[in-house]
Amino acid sequence: MSNEVTIYFDRPLSFEPSNIQPLNGIAGLYFIFSQTIDIQYPFDKSKLLYIGMSEKKTNSIGRRLLGHFDCKSKNLGLTNYRKVEPLLFTYINFEMLKNIWQFRIEDLESYFILDFVEQYGVYPICNNKSGFEIQNKTLTSSFKIDWKYFK
Image 1 (cartoon, rainbow, N blue to C red):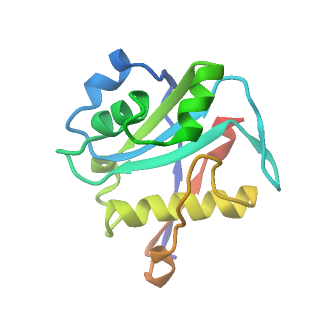
Image 2 (tube, rainbow, N blue to C red):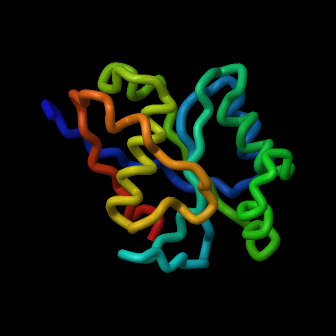
């Protein structure tokens, strides 16, 4: 690995349409998490519920988040957590990482999910797929992800 880049997350936004709308046209990763509920993962606790992505501007972060908000994504976990308490989210605009990440957004999502698994022992509780493909890539960058943000 040639260079390690630390990833810090932007301030949390409440998971509601007025905060989601401005993200139309932005591609990248997004993170949905609880305000108060600590999920007991095997290695540590975290409020992180879900890591998602938008691979293109036409199916933007805004559009994907709205799909989760309106329950059109059929992610029952997120829908049910939202019934219990208002959720928060943050995101990473893929444009910001293009000069240090030479693969697809899908691979970046896999990288984040696998890094979470390494730190916490399992996938985020509302993610039901695995981060498989990234293992076959030769990475020239590595990220140190600030998972404490979701503590």
